Amino acid sequence: MKRALRLAARAAGRTRPNPMVGCVIVQGDQVIGQGFHPKAGEPHAEVFALREAGDAARGATAYVTLEPCSHQGRTPPCADALVAAGVSRVVVAMVDPNPKVAGRGVARLREAGITVDVGLCESEAQALNQPFVTWVTWGRPMVTLKAATSLDGKIATRTGHSQWITGPAARQRVQRMRDTHDVVMVGSGTVKADDPRLNCRLSKGRDPIRLVVDSKLAIDDSAKLFHSGDAPLWIATTDQAPIARRRALELRDNVRILTCWQDSQGRVDLSDLMQRLGELEVTSVLSEAGGRLTASLLEDRLADRLALFMAPKLIGGQDAEGVLAGVGVNLLSECPTLCNMQTRMVGPDLLLEGSLCYPGAGDAI
Image 1 (spheres, one colour):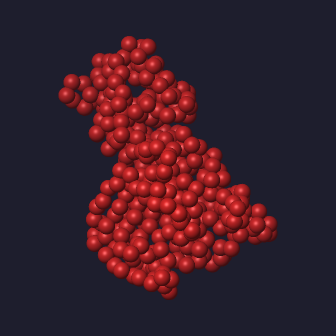
Image 2 (spheres, helix red, strand yellow):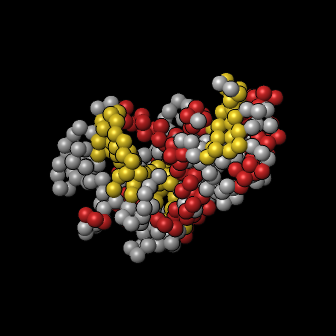
Image 3 (cartoon, rainbow, N blue to C red):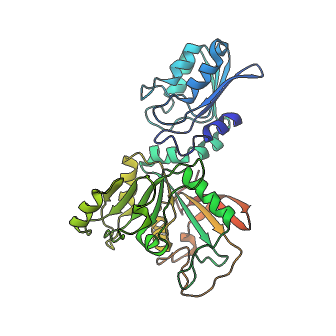
């Protein structure tokens, strides 16, 4: 199953809106077939593994990271393919949360006389497919907050200088994160301050969709986002934006305007934005926003994970921007906390990663 999970992870960022799935077929102690789902519309992991195994699949055991599908989608049901191949046992890491499956695949296999065991490496499988689980369960993408700060929590100096707080190794890791997320998101303030491209600069990387949250479409035409790469640029705005400006931007290649509801302060309603992204089959968002948008995502309980890079530097200054803006909580009992936390060194910098848990919201994946 560990091998199947590693296979599934090869397609990180490529399968939306489908989950990442790996399959390994074993006859005795020998692996006779393996595969993973590369992207939506392509065959599922079980199909690739069965093709490699051929007739040797009869009587074999299949290890699958997610319950085999039992319905006709873009591809035929994998449960039927396993039955037709004559496998005798299927080990499933986790049940598919998709209502179209949700136990039906396991039931189909058992009806055919196949032994099915569920739950091996379940937590690892859930963590791998947290974007898919979030999208299927809540109708919105999983949101990861990424920030680079000094030891005292500053993301820039008092003059706004922010490049670069962290070192080359940390910045390279951020490129890998962009490669594996569907969307990278910033606010209009970050565009104005840093003028980012938001592309993936890995040699074999995949550019994510670039998303700017800009309630009045104030983003300047000279911004690098309009003049770099072929990745789509989506701009989330409100009815406050001038109609002429909206129409002009929609005429640009690769630009899409998402007109969202306004919140109580006249800004883009982030809950509405996330639902719209879910409807567009976006399953994961990497937020590289400044303190205000980051704080809003936390206040609205829309952030699911945190990746915090901390450089061994002290910036100081009450006017230097911190990782979080906004009003903040009144009581410590109201604080979001980091669960399932992992720490590692990335060059000279420390990376803290984990799931965000909110008071009264239960356990995180």
